[in-house]
Image 1: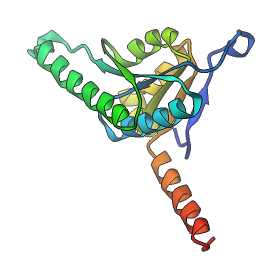
Image 2 (image 1 turned 90 degrees about the vertical axis):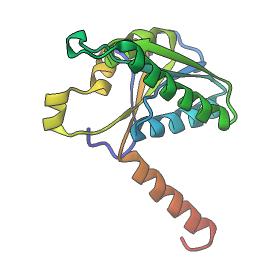
Image 3 (image 1 turned 60 degrees about the vertical axis):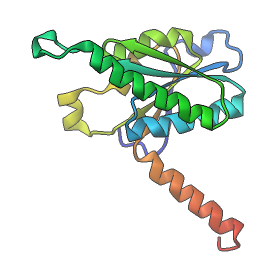
Image 4 (image 1 turned 60 degrees about the horizontal axis):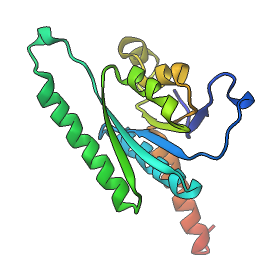
Length: 174
């Protein structure tokens, strides 16, 4: 939860399996700042690995007792998905999009069987809010059949710090 950088977790027994290069990378995207960070990291990895990218958005199931129609909510999440796809295309990638329904953690973990790597953001709510609200990234890490790369919210500060230091060195200030 308090990691200052990305954390990769492979499922139990992953090292014993036969794996080739990373060919298909999925990124969980809901339009929030943490998923923007995850999308940027996924784009960077896809370019470096020569892999394919799939942007995945999950429309959570809502209790019909609340009187909320699911279709307008699906439209909202479909719009978020289109925004993520467009961002990846602007980065020069061919990309596929997938809109899933259900609990985000369950849906992402189940879809992990189709992926060589799943990238997702973490809001880093902290221990109390984690207990009260749950943690999608924690649930996905525990159940996904593919390796998961979690990009925490604070990774942005580390990236900016690294970029500033690199720029200073390039300009002869480091």
